Amino acid sequence: MRFLMMVRANQDTEAGVMPSDALIAAMTKYNEEMVKAGVLLDAAGLQPSANGARVRFSAGNVTVIEGPFDSRELIAGYWLIQTKSKHEALEWAKRCPAPHGEHADGVIELRRLFELDDFDPSPAIDDARRLEQQLAKKK
Image 1 (cartoon, helix red, strand yellow):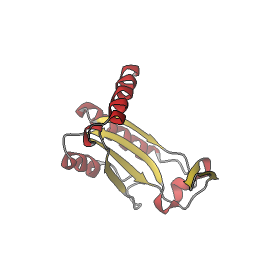
Image 2: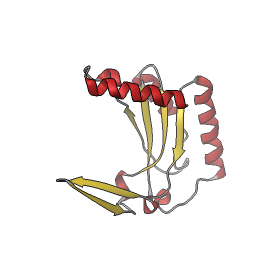
Image 3: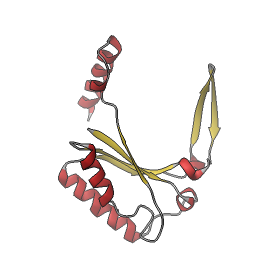
Image 4: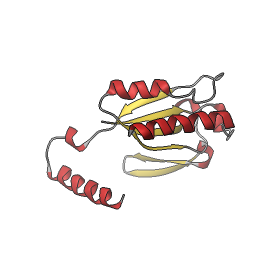
């Protein structure tokens, strides 16, 4: 099972405040533990929403909205992990260093990714499987 662990943004991450060396060291150690356990697939921090954009689709129209955005629902970083269960994924999330430092509030949201096996068989799913196999060969 693959899970996305998302760190919610806060005022500091949206202002572009870089993490402390201590937090980077703690996160690096945590990431190394996940690599050794074979669960980490990818991880990254995200730049502030002021450097991003949203593409909105509505009634056949496409609109681009430049950031910044309201920080209440934004993501500041993520880990993509693969575990045997939701319980195991939660255990990894609970071991994470406080994402904004020991003395700041922080939230990590955990969401399971859909896998192609979650869908009923269809020609579209067959095409998606072929594409997934092509992508896997490029890695």
